[in-house]
Length: 161
Image (tube, rainbow, N blue to C red; front, side, top):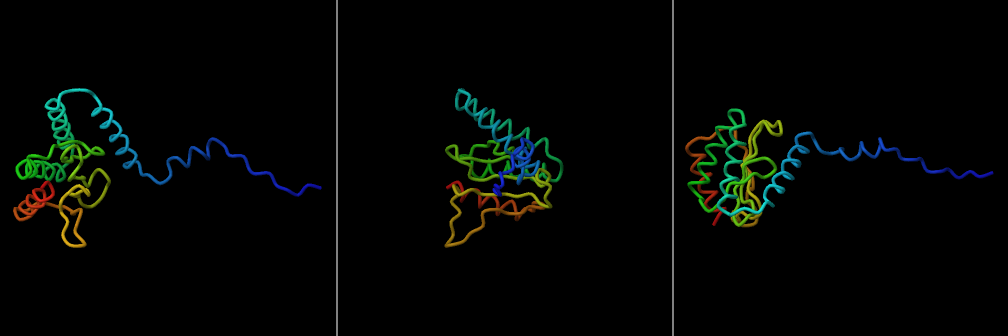
């Protein structure tokens, strides 16, 4: 008598269920938007045309946002443009971001996009914010005061330097 068991067969259904495990609908949507962004950036056009298209895409994405995220994103866009004009607006995972030499330095993540209680201003590892052995790389935003705007302007300027 043979007492060895045969391994269970995997079905297509179990294999398909695993591919979506771990990511929310919002995260999958952001990844799809990033894929579209990469495809669009691969087109061969002049730098000036590309910069204009990318800024228009950022402004369109901001316009789609609901208050108060839209208001904060508009203010942040103006602050970044004024404080660090060398940073180029571009979409990054469907959110407004600002890049130097093609590398994202800072970005805005709306609260509504990921159903969170606050929006986020984040900085990548390309940002020059190093301060000792520890420093903040993102900030929760529930509104913007004049003092907040001044601090953000200084952070963005330092990040881009």
